[in-house]
Amino acid sequence: MFAITIPVAGGPEALTWAEVPDPVPAPGEVLVEVAAGAVNRADILQRQGFYDPPPGTPPYPGLEVSGRIVGLGEGTTGWQLGQEVCALLSGGGYAQKVAVPAGQLLPVPQGIDLVTAAALPEVTCTVWSNVFMIAHLRPGETLLVHGGASGIGTMAIQLAKAVGARVAVTAGSPAKLERCRELGADILIDYREQDFAAELLKATDGAGADVILDIIGAKYLAQNVKALAVNGRIAVIGLQGGVKGELNLGALMAKRAAITATTLRARPAGEKAAIVAAVAEHVWPLLESGRIHPVVDRAVPMHEAEEAHRVVESGAHVGKVLLLN
Image (cartoon, rainbow, N blue to C red; front, side, top):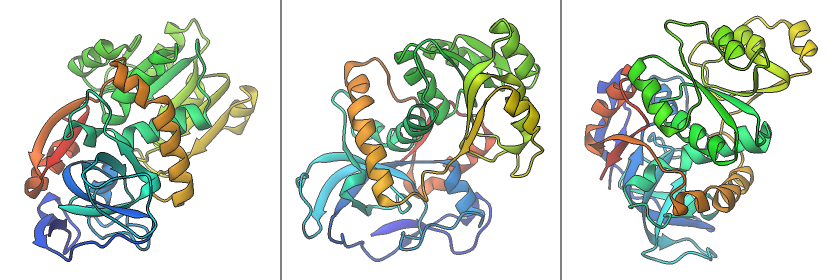
């Protein structure tokens, strides 16, 4: 088969379409013929040499795919050859085929086409696990989403609104904020022009956000605590603004608040399977009813992944950028 390889870490031009050995499904795995994959920030970090795949994972980037099952590992049950699925991966999605633990598979939701389904696994699992399973967002609470126009952001807005929460977002342009409003965001903050903590406190009459979903990290740490409500929860899922920041523990204690920080990729297979099962139970019905939907900015041929990476790094997209086989 062919896959996107990274012979030498570097810029988007480092991505190379090359012939590689076909994967073989291990016991408990399925072999998926990939119809489409999606670009995530982790893929960019891996390409740059900053985020190696976990041991035993294919060396090719790619954390989510959609496709059809073309092989079953020994002892794998519950799935059939030819079935259309999407999958959460630890890596290897930028390829024509990938072997996936059966617990990380999801059926393609009714009403969603096979290619578009590639936009779902990483965002739904990330948002559901962090915002709901860890931070326990409740109806009537306020969620602040940084990067509201991103793939994660566009899904977080919709899921939070679906459970009856109020949603605030930050984004870097009026056009992106308008897209967030169309998805249901109630409070729109241009982080380039406005102090997001001050704007959020003003919009909530000083109450602040009950949950903050943060892709920035260190750069936003102090401001996130300032923007947080009493008994609030900050879920850090990205480090685009650095890894080391100064935290005023007194301010955190005064708000009886909590900060969690997670990555999805490095979690054990059992934890991923539990998250996938929760997403199937809680998120898939919302997709199939049409209450929420994946947001796709564009689709690029997989062998032109270099172009897709340039788009994501530029920040010019809204939602997900897909890679087509």
